[in-house]
Structures are given as C-alpha cells and as structure tokens.
Amino acid sequence: AQTVTQSQPEMSVQEAETVTLSCTYDTSESDYYLFWYKQPPSRQMILVIRQEAYKQQNATENRFSVNFQKAAKSFSLKISDSQLGDAAMYFCAYQHDKIIFGKGTRLHILP
Amino acid sequence: DTGVSQNPRHKITKRGQNVTFRCDPISEHNRLYWYRQTLGQGPEFLTYFQNEAQLEKSRLLSDRFSAERPKGSFSTLEIQRTEQGDSAMYLCASSPGFGYTFGSGTRLTVV
Image (cartoon, rainbow over all chains, first blue to last red; front, side, top):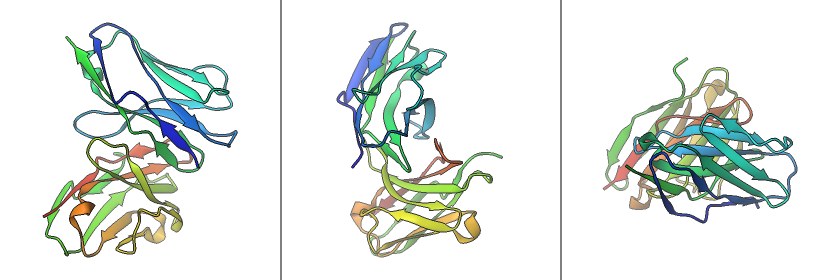
C-alpha cells in the first residue's frame, strides 16, 4: 500500500528566511504524481506545487521549489524568503489513482 | 466556473439523525472525490467517482455512509444514524485526471 510520511509535525522559520519541509513516500508504482498542498486556517486546500515522477527536473513555483529524489522516494519542499502568509498546514501528497496525504506539517512564520 | 462548491458549509446535527452533503465539481472534471479530515490530521480518502461510476470506496466508508453522483455531475454524501465520531470536515475535490481542486468543505458537528 502506498504511504506518505511527514516526520515534522511542526516547524518554525523567521520571516524572510528559508525553510525545508520533509516528505517520504512508499510505492511500487513507477508512474505517479507528487504534490504539496497548503491549508491555511480558513481550511481550503490550495495546490502549492506538483511534480510528475517521470520528470527528473525539480519543479519550481516562484518561492517554492522541491527536491525530488525518486530512488530515495523523497520529496521535500523548500520555501524561500518566507512570508507571514505562508503560515499554514502543509500536506505532502502522492497520486497514482487517488491522492494519499501525509499527516501534515504546521509551519509557523516568526516576525 | 467558480471552482468546487460544497453545501452546506456547516452542519450541526443530533446523534442518530441523517445528514446529506452536496458537492458541485468543476464542470469539465470527470473525477470527483470525497475525503474526511479531522482536526490536525491529513484528509482521509472515502470514495471517488469517474463520471457516474463509483470506482472505489474506503474501508472508512461504513454502511451508514452512501455517496452518489447521478448523471456524472454533482455528488451527494449521506450519513445515516450519525455518531459523534462522524464529526469532521468533509472535503470534496474534482479532477481532470491528476491533481485536485478542493471545495471549502462541510464541517459536521454531531451533538
């Protein structure tokens, strides 16, 4: 069965600094997608970034980038120049058919 | 298109009552998913539809839960004889194939 593990329940970062959230997953599939979703206190899930497993190049979206290590089944999220609005729960997610979510990392931004 | 719409936003019900939630997906998305999320946890998969066909149901979906998607458009999730353990946020998402767009969710409180 596919699983997604986020080992950091909470993290804090100073505003304008860089933070990396960790994620590992387990699958026997070769074709899949990986995502990071953000869930602010308003609770609507928002897609931050996605990575297709067949692509070797790491995805980047403005201040957000990933480090995708397929052999290690690792998919970390780096947030550069952290802003107060980045404070939220971040969920790592894997999709082959349906999406499976990790338990989340709560990110605090310190002013 | 205004995205995925869920109604109601909040529902308070007495234990033992039946409740029904509605989800209107993005019109061109053929896949529709239901998830349940409790406080501080990641969303847990309940069931999903491709068009009108219900393709998978989680073991979490007891016989008190039923979901429908008539004509492959909107979907309903019904919970019969609600229990306090059913209190959660129920999330709906739609997808064209990979990656989801989430609705704002329906928060159910069973008293």
